[in-house]
Structures are given as structure tokens and as C-alpha cells.
Image (cartoon, rainbow, N blue to C red; front, side, top):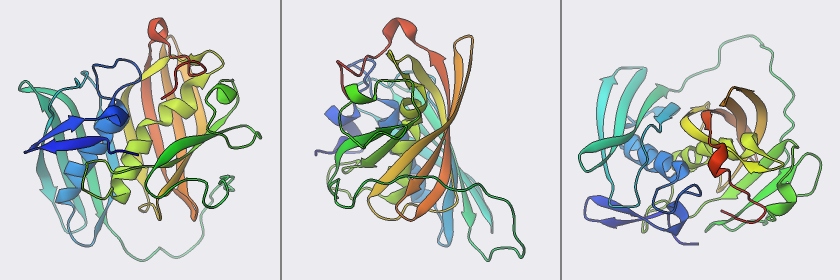
Length: 263
């Protein structure tokens, strides 16, 4: 698979994988989240890990050269915060904030946690260089077939991503950020397609992903009057690593029928 972006000096150019399923003239939220994570991780101090990323998708990012800016908000001994912005025509099109935390010993004692039911497909089902996503609806088998997953069942996705930017290896944090935006797909893809578009995405991580594969399991969807909250668990072959939450707006007039129009 090709990369999501190529470089032109300090600017980034969207490739086919980065284009939005909603409009061919726009960059998809998954790619926007990846670019902002790429910029923010340059500010991660030694001994810290990214623990929370929030991306606000308040203005479409056009399929044109992209500038990404960032700044440190606070650099502390245990908590560091930074902000990033995607800029086109001197307008901020999307913004993100990240919190980096130091790692340490676990506190004494035990706390409740749910039993993890996180299915994984067979080893070797996707390529380290990137592969089309696999989907699983309820107790059905894993498949690349979008049409077979256009239903009202609980969904799980499994991804191996190519490079975010051509010539650069994709980092674990970038993988997680790109997948965070696809929470919309596992939570809001129903029997008639996908009818909600993300207004934001928040990714929380207790650790970074291990390996090149990542899964996303829908946990909850709460919708009222065209506003929906989708929550999913992010995991790899070693177990859960974080939670993804999206706030989405109804886009019913431009609903995507994945049975006929695939990503």
C-alpha cells in the first residue's frame, strides 16, 4: 500500500489513502488525526508517553497542501502538554491537544476491571506494510468484504497501516491516532451505511501499541436528535491499550453506503 501523505518541503500532500469518504476534495479525519499526532510526538520528552490525544475537526481540511504547526503548552516533571494545528490559507482547519505522562510503578492493591473479550484474526492475515481492514460483525468470521458487514450488529475492525508520510516509518502513536478516528465506523456503521460524521476524537492510552496490527471494538453508541457518542476499545495482540471516543453529527443526506462504496 502507498502512504497517506507525501512531502513537499515543509508541506504535506494528501494521497488516495488520505482522501475523505464523504468528499473527494477533502482529507479524511483519520488522516488528519494521524498528521496532528505526528507533529505532537516531536514534543514528547524522554521518559514520557502520550496518554491522551484530543482532535477537534471543526472545519474541512481540503485536498491541498497542508501546514502543521505546534507549540508546547507546559513542560513539567510528570505532565507535559502540547497543541497542534492544521493550517490552510492561513486558516486553522483542525486542532489537537496532547498530554504526555511519565511512567512509573503500579500502586499497591487490586481494582476492578472488566473481562476482556477482544477477538483477534489469525496470525499473518495482514501485511506489515499495510493491508485493507478486516471487519467482524457479532460472532461472524473476519472478512475484508464491506457488504457482508453492513448490518446492525456490534462491529470490530482490524488494521495494518502503511506509512503515514512517504519515506517515514509509521510510529505506534500515529497508528493509534489514525485508528481513533475510525471509531465512527465501528460505532456508527449500521444496516443502511454510515450516517454520522465526526466532530472530534479523543484517544486515551495506557501504553503504546505493540507490533503493526491494531483492533478496535465498538463498546457503546448513544444517539439523540442527530448527535451521537461512540466509544470503542483499542487493542493489539497483547491486549487492551486504550479507549477511543468520538462525538458525531448526523450527516443523513450524505450517508455512505459501504455495500456499494468502499473505503
